[in-house]
Length: 225
Image (tube, rainbow, N blue to C red; front, side):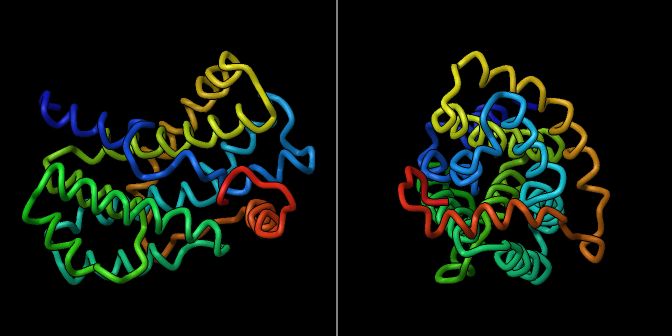
């Protein structure tokens, strides 16, 4: 990767990038309330399930297809529509949609690009997916698929680990231990997802969706999902 492309990728996946990722836990808050997530081991297990069988796996496959279709308007718009629908609960749909809208707005203002801006205009007013929005940005700015997808998945996992550190609570060292344990999972998902056809796309993590559903009525909440 060239220096400019690497700088973009680091910026877009940084915790400081203003997409509001810090305010979502992807159902983790209810899992902590129930006692299912209570230490570094169970936190890593939770995030691993999201990566391998849940929304992060779906996002990874859709990211790859969107990146490859960035210059094909009809194909890209169909992928964007599918991605916006592939969430199991209203809160996880909100999580992806709100981050996508913020990403489209901020990235378009800070790093204008004709292909990316055209996509944002076509999709204005429609539900969006954060994964697709970032995939289009990466393709438009010449960031290769492999590092782009790996970075997206790392950011997804790191945000959930950060939420877990605050919720359990855990120490910062435990958070880094969980991150290290998930490195192989992130690499494997990033390698496998581009090989998955859209017709074969699916997930199998019903407990994650149940956690998210219960979070909607959780009495005390710090996070929006």
